Length: 69
Image (cartoon, rainbow, N blue to C red; front, side):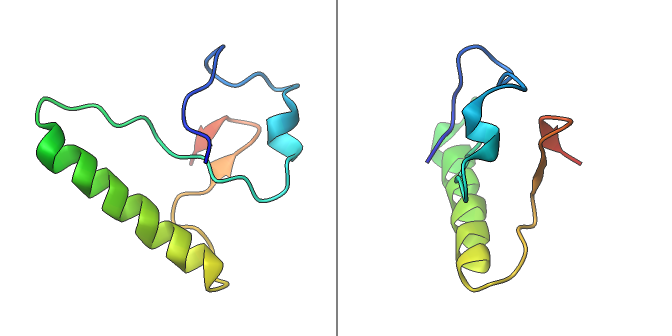
């Protein structure tokens, strides 16, 4: 699981862009971590389960843009 990168954003030449099947999470911050972090975790795990079942991710990252469309 990859979440935070230094430098940010991840450099276009980084080997992580060509690593097969990486799981890149998102940086969760909020004034109310008890709710927000749990919601982020639930969204991430639902997407992981979706991909493991053979479906497409709901939040794919475009390597050229370095963020989801």
